[in-house]
Length: 288
Image (cartoon, rainbow, N blue to C red):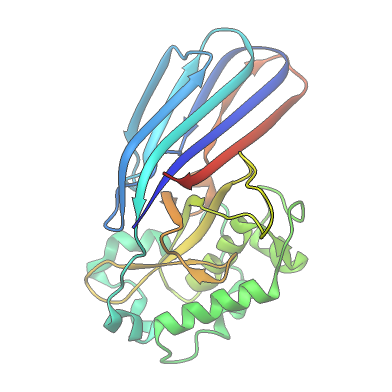
């Protein structure tokens, strides 16, 4: 078990006053069989007229706020203390043929994750790309791991190669992207073959290179995918194609949905005459 202390600060600056800010945030980690949440906090500055939390359709903690005081800067600061262990999977489920992972009538709640969504189109190219790993009768754990390995090897991690609105086809054409893109590509490929796959947002604890000091605020939000395994246990194999690995005790799960659009860290609407704005993000994930 590893205990992580998380700080996630997002700051928006505007060149004119904002008279009203409405925001939705997904920054509170989930309590899961492999993840225990001990403390959470959410501070919005300026102090909001309204601040509340609720559970969304997928069981994620969703925060809401409204700031009515005129402001040129808006800060959202989330904190948490979380214990994480590496998930343990049923070996029979991992060894089952991948075709058995397609949801049946008993797994009707998973069907939502087999279909196209706003940011994950089920394109022929993505389906064909995944087909090389999904050989007939291949164990689902082995097939998904092979696809993760191929995405990691075939695509370059390069910030700026894509944008937050890039499509799966854009990623396939560019052969580069970031964690969100690689998660979307893997999801599109597997959904194209009828499997249920979630988009997962969270954090990955990183360590500095040998001889380098740790830079405060240099961590970032992360994204990966989780594939439903065959059987009645409702187990989901969580995999990180960006880092070519299964999710383990360095990954902190915050929320999941059909794609990034369901669970962005912060989104909202502002009322302003401002012409320009900037956003800065500082994330720390450190042993507590």
